[in-house]
Image 1 (cartoon, rainbow, N blue to C red):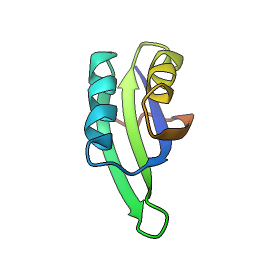
Image 2: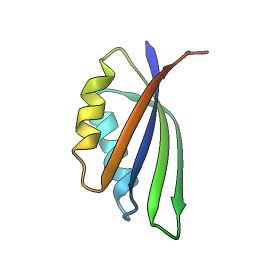
Image 3: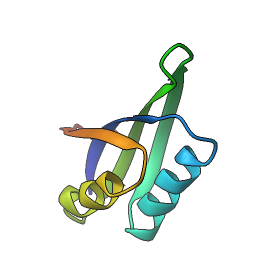
Image 4: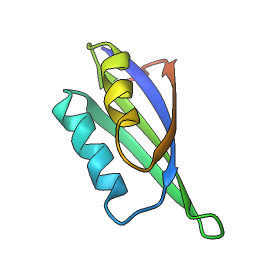
Length: 82
């Protein structure tokens, strides 16, 4: 199983994180870690999520990029230490 780090920047809205997590679950990825912060001056949320899956990460990235308020999604494969 491959492990990826998603770095997401988005306009901070009340349901933003819930929508992102739902997309991840519906696409068959397993969430291992979530770290979310907000810049109060710019109302920009930064969300770092580590996911595991045998599926191509491009499937997930394409769906997250379609969400309203998401401005950028970058990803990198990381070593799975489990």
